[in-house]
Length: 175
Image 1 (cartoon, rainbow, N blue to C red):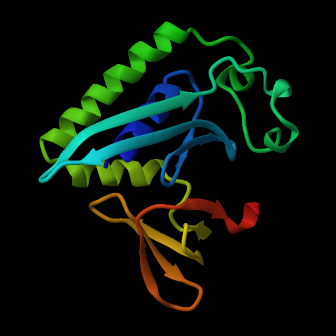
Image 2 (cartoon, rainbow, N blue to C red):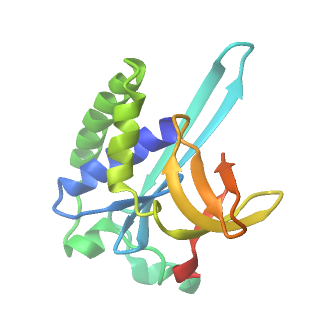
């Protein structure tokens, strides 16, 4: 659930700037189909719960996208490019942490269903024909929903129902 609530906090923060972002499962925030933010988590499991979780959030605030490698020019953007003005780093962080605190408190109070419903409203993955690449396989199908653990539920092209716990998600119409 942590990647989902963090992506919600990033999306809500961006929205306060006057831009409507979307969330791509499992950990990307996008503007006009271009990635503006990514979330990574590392954890170590203890006997009954995680020993620790390290959370990394990257947001392209004031990146000059013309300096990005050519292969990223069509798939990445920055907030300053979209707004046509610089973004105040400290102000962005303050707003982000306020949203993160709110969503994390909801998570701790076992309001996961409400978080999943809200995440689904921001999602640009659900309902799309996707290709999921995992370490073991590539799966194509329609993204149906997110379950209570934040896992993607898909109906494969072969008609099977699969639960995707992790992997790289690509939209077939964007390949």
